[in-house]
Image (cartoon, rainbow, N blue to C red):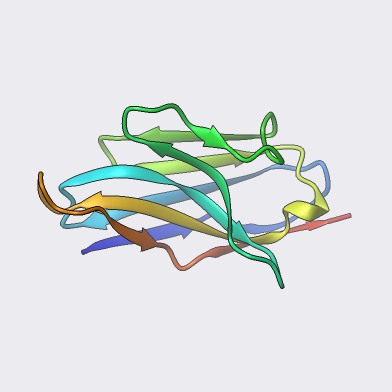
Length: 121
């Protein structure tokens, strides 16, 4: 079992910055993917940024150039630096991890509880 704990959400004016952090803990064998999704009211959850083991970080077109995700594989953490925030970035942001409990185990998907980001105009 893997637990994901997010922190760093809040209220910011348009053009401002926020940094989100996510830490994975529990019985971790191998995290194959980790990243961030978001869900705005009345909309589906969408990818913000994610990395898959062996690949580079993938960003949504809407955040490319403004958001930067960094990760610490040794600590099983990912951070999301969000700059030049826009009102349309307002959403609940969820940390995600794909985890294998053994070398031949399937990848199971885990989600954090979510952290609110509100950008005022």
